[in-house]
Image (tube, rainbow, N blue to C red; front, side, top):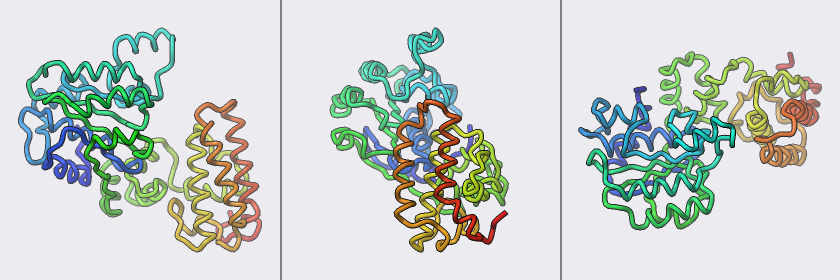
Length: 342
């Protein structure tokens, strides 16, 4: 099993020292909500837990590692269960295999109801039961209400951990029944060292960490998605030129997110603040950027496009339109003599 990031291990030890049957782990994406939630589940069910969580060697730890533990239920959208290696219920898998439906992008109410029944039954291994819900904001109101009663009056040996990147989207009644823990940001040096330990080149780690807004798990995902630090650094100028290859290979949601980062940094530059996702040298200087009102309109347009990016009418046309919008907004900055003009 991969070594746990040091900031996740610290928080795990902190939470295990406290009592509680339901935790709500919340914070921005990329800080390790899922990793921390799984660490808690492993420690709760471990046959020989220590001061630093699960032993990693016992039958319980092995069962979780291979996704077969009888006393664990994981509630996720089916697309994420597939990505993270958790098996789907037999009927759900059969429906998807037979193309009766696509994997769900939200937590299904029937899965929640099955989990509620699951916690009422006797523990198979005698160390209690655990339910992990991630990302918890993907519960709709019906699914969340199915969980409420059990959260309020849980069986004595059942524990819950809900992990979310949007706690404000949860029902207040769900939040009130959990002990909340805000995910902690790692120090930049610690995050960079962790990225290097995952195989990221030392000179590339700071670039990808900046591209992810300081979120190490998101930074690692960017590395694994391909691309290069040089391409990221050159992206603002490429888009200002209207170079459609700057977004090549991206799905529309990813492209919109990249443009939102660029728009954020352009606005920051315009008002004299430090950019977050790109180095200052890679952005047009403030005097050559469009007005705040123009950049604000671009930001609003990107927010609207983000709502439909998962299901675009035509992905290729959408990427072309996004590139054209970026060139229209930023193009004059390139023509004004940017010092890094290529």
